[in-house]
Image (cartoon, rainbow, N blue to C red):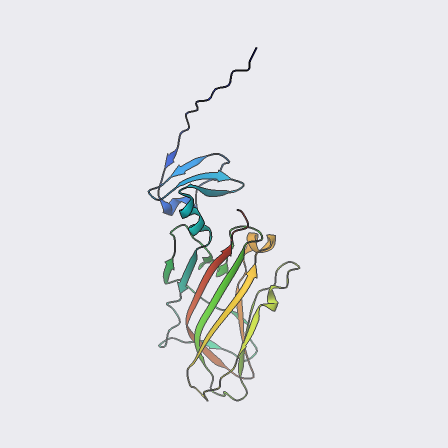
Length: 213
């Protein structure tokens, strides 16, 4: 006797909006519908199943975070030899898609979506030093558990003279390991050889490979 299978299933789809997609409790097979896309829970994340072109664009999107605290009228003082986290309160945020979240302004941590994702991050700020000849800035990613993220670094010199504004624009590539995914990481900066100031800080983060696909 032939096996009879039910070929018709009725699935309840939850209607929501894009702002809530990232915060819902993810369950495998559970589906969400917004005005932009249809999502399904799969392996710990909400995957866009329709339209596929939107899913590809979200998977490889970008976000820009502009600090609004440290400006030309309120510069961040860096003391010689004292390491601090580069602050960014994300006062202004621009995204290629509303579901993207690559930075947490409360914890000041850079985030990742999947283990083994790859990213490109641009760090921008203005800076100056009262003694330009002997001072430079050293910035680096915070190291992870065994992964040498602190080797993602750069040094900033002051070729324009004492107390003259200097523009820094650095581009860095990295991948996310399991520790990065769990805890995130941050940018550290140190003035070396003398004091300095930084302001007008911008983080631009682009996801270049989605390891979940």
